[in-house]
Image (cartoon, rainbow, N blue to C red; front, top):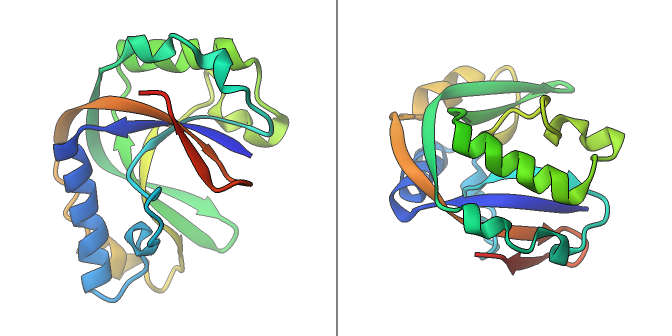
Length: 167
């Protein structure tokens, strides 16, 4: 599985990492607990089973794009919840998403939620939150309104556990 990921500027990344750290300091689950150097705040733009990075040539020229983080989103997943920061949709963000989708073609059915007209842009703060922990998680997250930019683009190869930086 491959994911195309939009990477925020340093100050936006720091704000997300602050929320990751607040969760950890409270003894709660956090996306910041993953020690891998490849683990960093990002917006998933597309997911595909197979991906040729050369298909994305030139799409990085659309960067930077405004990246505004709004409130919290909750995504139900089985018996747990994913807690994320909402990414405010802008014309430039949608244009970048469409350019990536056009180059990669339609997603496989299991990744249809990353395709045009079905995508919910977000930055994950924590996965697998149980209903019992959810109030504590929400209390720990400051989630300040952030206005920044997305300045980088990368591809995550989950099988190889490798990053290809496009910008």
